[in-house]
Length: 236
Image: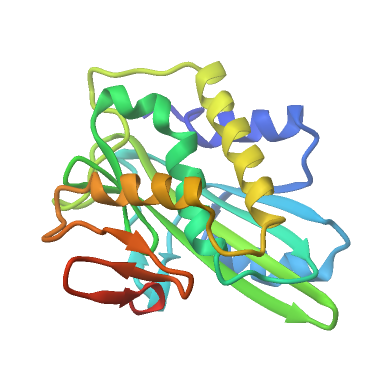
């Protein structure tokens, strides 16, 4: 496996951007690392990057599988805010999807609510947004595990790029810059999704070949609307 991709490319980008960060060749979970470290410091934002993550987790402590046969990205973004918006997790998923759209040519990308990224019918990434309240400060941790290339760790999993596809360090860093920019824009929004955001999120969700019924709308309470059902985002 190519040891510089994608972890060290991400490290190089963070150094170029002069982002506060913590790099480790191997850890249990970047999310746990951020939970322990970020609230103790003074940074407004900090990026945690691991070469290998042995005990990655998602919502409800579901395990994120690690494989040395797969080039995987393991990161957690830490942001110090004054408030947390109910709508942020929706915007986080949409931001990742939009940042990866240049890879759409390699296969259909879609979102599966509330926090999974798919290529065709295989899961390639998972997001985890957590909040820590300490006095007036709100610490928002956004973790991402992404299978980028190589052999997927599970039969139900896929990778962003197959064995015939390649990328350059410049293309990878362009993705990271796009995602950082869209994330920062999402963090300052506290109002419900606007019409353009709803349309973009619905398109990303409805691209999934796994859906049994399409989503028609997202109401101002955060419910996904189908022809016959109203599904709270928080129940997914």
